[in-house]
Length: 483
Image (cartoon, rainbow, N blue to C red; front, side):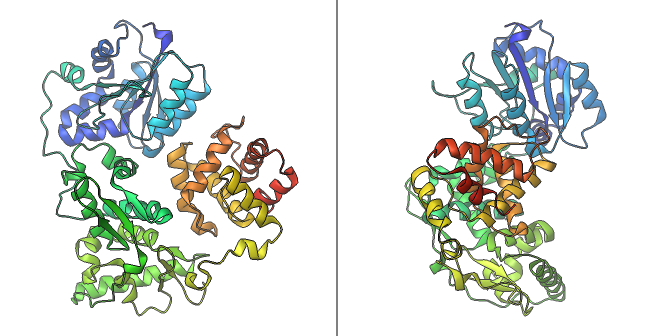
């Protein structure tokens, strides 16, 4: 296949990290000698071996200069980016330029799948994903798969000159220790499960693949299976989630009514008491600065990030669950609400979400606009949000794009995480819908024109085509009046 028909995109971050866990010398070879191992790989991709290599290599900040130079010498453009932005830039580059007949991606994250589907939809050869058994295992694709899956390990080992010996068993986490990663996974499960009350087991692998540490591991993070990993995830959070069913027909049940955990005494030691005081003080300060109550899962993940695995490994310092840990505090600035998925709030600043649970405040405050928004939701699945919520949504997307390149999955997650601090908690599903809506317009994310007002205008253009009978003035009132 000629050079003009092949475009290469190299995900340095995940591939290098996986190789480093298995064999440090392999990781060094990956960064030092891209010309050598790529030449060995071309035959497996059915590409002529004498082509001049070219494309883009995405590397995180802090990558050794010698690796950057090696990829530049091989003919690649090196782009410094945040690790989670790799699939995003692939989307922008591959879908907004004249595409080659074949797009070759070295490395793998599940978030590539929708991008590959878009590339494949343009016709030509199927994109090629080159994965490494040590970094990610891609199953043999079916005929309808949007990509060809190729293992690059044999060609890489040929270039390396020896078989890669794993430095330790597969699994980045020992199965006996919960971690902040498990807690973040629990937060994602809770968000997805609360929408319908249940989450099928078959939905969990794709959920877990949102996390690069899972996507680059081939042994369920050391737990050796979906069910054992899921049990560990739920135990780490100990929230209103439980496994229901047996065999292959099990699911996650979201049941806040069954979360009756009462506060229990902590393991009282001088070290524990000092840490508790530090955590509660920090949490009280944090809540006092938030415009709205904070979802419990978000707060738990935040504390795990800040105070580390000692907090989780001790079972929330002896309290056994996050809820009882929070309820044990004597800090008057911290309260736990059982509304919805559970919230933390500061009583002097926030209203307990339970007091307004079930009320349609949008309909109460905007009796003329709310029915129109409800009709748009019913007929076209447009998120039923108030103008204030849409203002937060567009500002969050804009802020996220100021620091990170666009990626449908990454941008929606990042924007969702920003929303509470901007005034409203917005579901990720709503942000996803709006991002996909804007993608149907000429607007190009990441081109310096991602201000909230411009994003809202692009969305209004898309929605007006979806619902031509709705006056543009009404759409402007719904989507842009509070910006």
